[in-house]
Amino acid sequence: MSDSVGMSVDLGGIKMKNPINTASGTFGNGWQFEGFFDVAQLGAITTKGCAAEPWDGNPAPRMAEVTSAIMNSVGLQNPGVPAFVASYGEYLSGLEERGCRVICQVAGHSLDEYVRAVELFEELAPFASGLEINISCPNVSRGGAAMGATPGAAAEVMRAVRPRTRRPVVVKMAPHDVGEIGRALESEGADALSLINTIPAMSIDVSTRKSKLSRPTAGLSGPAIHSIAVRMVWECHNAVDIPICGIGGVTSGEDAAEFILAGATAVSVGTANLVDPTAAPRILSELESWALSQNVSDINELIGAVEC
Figure 1: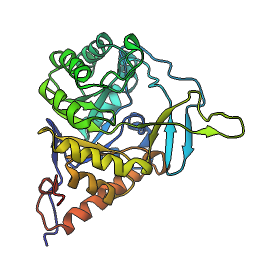
Figure 2 (figure 1 turned 90 degrees about the horizontal axis):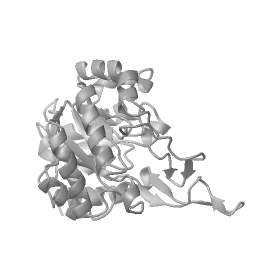
Figure 3 (figure 1 turned 180 degrees about the vertical axis):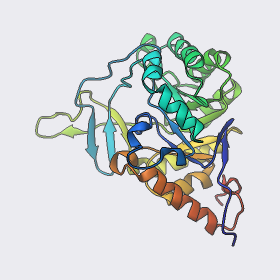
Figure 4 (figure 1 turned 90 degrees about the vertical axis):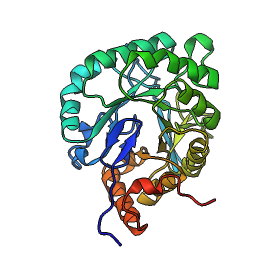
């Protein structure tokens, strides 16, 4: 067995030195974790979702712990792209120079909002190696359904933003119809896909008979959704030819390996960051050890290698 294995991957033009990314909204904007470990050792980070203008997000309470998972209804609170760049651009530029790719997530409630946010990132954020378009945001002009809830709606978002940036575009998908919607996004020029986003869920305080959060439903993330996410990555991998970043309940190198075998090129660590701030580098180390045990020279040989 070789004593080393190539770990670099290419996520739709985002060239990462290893497959470990962080999930948007669980890792701040990177600098918050520098006191725990050298963030530059990761392949990439994905920054918290940002819109063209500031969003207040939802009222508290916005998070609740449930069995093997966390529920959140933060509502993508963000300062807007200009303020985001002004506050974090220097750090993120330095992180890119240190070898960790920076992926900036784009949020919007309408096609126009997505376009304006992408244009602002294109103009103000030279440090971004790629953009992640979060198509799970509610479309306020169409009754609150997710912007990418159907293949047609997802394709519409992609057609609107693709001409506005020269950077690789990754699309963050909701956890449904991933094969069909993935094909629609690929046909409109998406460079890669990331899935899954949180799963809609509900938790009730039986003492008060009210939701544990300020809204009736919220997004479920963490170990409880991992096997569902692996299945959806496998389905999407069999439907598209572009790379996939697997997200959902990754707490160990074995979890990350499952995603890669199911067809993911990269893997994002999310809720685990909130439990253990050193989770991402530990998972990277465990993933590399697993890859070494597989008698391959390059981790890319293991993408989609599940035997069904």
